[in-house]
Length: 227
Image (cartoon, rainbow, N blue to C red; front, top):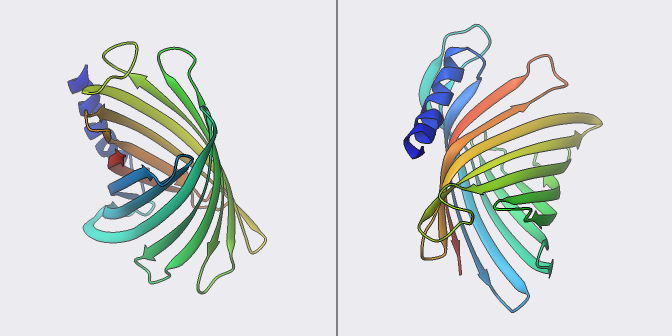
């Protein structure tokens, strides 16, 4: 079962590229660490970076070659309203390959459901991006995620799990609206030291209101620590 899932994750981006529907493909590593500052306050730091490996524009040939797309540095302060609801506020600094580095403020609420042997997560996020040469951008985001253990009815240290999520983003900038969708499928492992490892496919489509719909496929892998 594990080998089959890994093969699917590795072959999916290659198959999509062969169909000529992807504009950008690359790698997306991320690292996150969280710890309790006080009994009620949690601090989270995160770094994520996109590294392109190939681009394709319409009917043109595939242009293969490495390039740095962007790197985000994020920090959050969060607290629990109850065992199933968290609220948080954060800040992001983005290093953009085009030189248009930006600042972003973030506010979010997360809701957890435990219906059976899996987890359902809901996240509603508002963010405001401050760009150097453009008008500010405002976005509303909703993400639903499912976490399912592979080896039993519950996830225990040393076991594998699957994560699926879908996020819809609405943006507004200079009286222009935008829409984006992000689908992620990952295989994860919970270690015995309160850390998780995940690897999978992050597929994004945007510019729905433009004539040239954009597709981006990332091989995403992350390391998440909690203290």
